[in-house]
Image 1 (cartoon, rainbow, N blue to C red):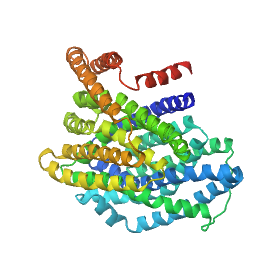
Image 2 (cartoon, rainbow, N blue to C red):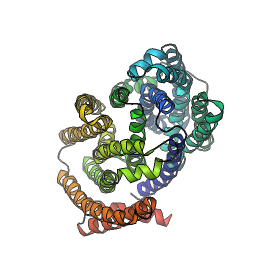
Image 3 (cartoon, rainbow, N blue to C red):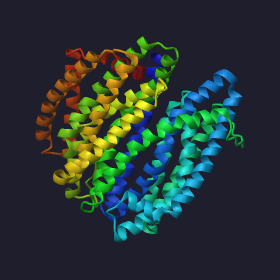
Image 4 (cartoon, helix red, strand yellow):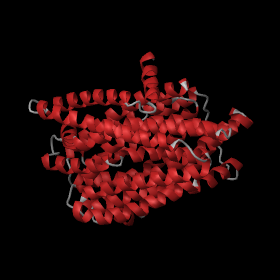
Length: 507
């Protein structure tokens, strides 16, 4: 357990650093371009590449490469595992290159599929930027193979700060684009992905990686990986379709809706990426080991502790983001071309995303349990359910709530998803301590409500002097109040989080 705490702490700290620089990147984009044609076009181009290609391949790589590599290394030795890694990199690069060329040829219909409401200058610019960014697909896929290799060898610090060179390169590109033209944004993005890949190579070599130019499509392990990728790709595709649906529908709304949705989504994902990802990245190998030993008792205990830890951390953040959405967005983004009207729209969207934060975090943990049990079908079915519910909810809610309805639809679909996963997990591994999860939800919600009252009262007074100061003081006091109440209520997994904090301080 101490090793898990140490790894989670390292990844948590590294992720904080990366997220801060990531926010700085978004601040620079917001300052330079606000929410208009250029920001809509660039973000849509990046979204197309991410949703249609990068995210699908990366999820598939991380979910299938790691267990196969570990198995090869244990049974056949390091040399064969490294040969398999080189084979994976070479095959993925060739496939990515073919995909990029096809994407370049069919860019216009691809953009129209993703951004049905884009016309005129927005459509033309999006096509132009998409064609440039397309050629980063192969670079990103190789990067994620290297990332998985490092995580297998417990190199979480480096994988945690991996986004740093990418974000710094994007910031430089945005600033240069003011002088050299908007195309520099796209070229800078490709360069940023390249720098991110180069950043990992020395650390992989330090951990024993040696690249070999070998391609064997008929290798039994490649076949095994290809078979496992199918359901994972379908599941990942379903989640990406959710993003596609939201952004596509937002393209029919007033100019700037897509950008507002994107900024709010980034804030929402900041929470998931910072806290939930730190837990799931470290706990996934533990789930896999317990599953391989068929130790269901410990698997259930570890699962409940992980879920309760996510609830304990995310619940107050969710409530806080809901009640302080406007000052949060204002302090972070309102400057330059990002004006008060942009703040209001983005804050409304953030409030709706906040409703589903806890459910989304719980879902990410539950999915890892199924993967560790070598069950990719249930997560796939869950993803399809999410898509159907999200599409229906988005079409209904967008009529009255506009862009905020898209965020609320995503939140409700996340709640539906975790209910489905928990129900099926109980069928698969038997009864687990569901009452512990329900009690944690109730107690943390109660503590968060008391925290919210405290935060609002403090913010109302101090914000008269400075909204930034009001936000800092009220959030700090709210965190103290929340911590005291959860200790009084004896919320499950509180001791688990305290151990993590102690581990961080000790280091």
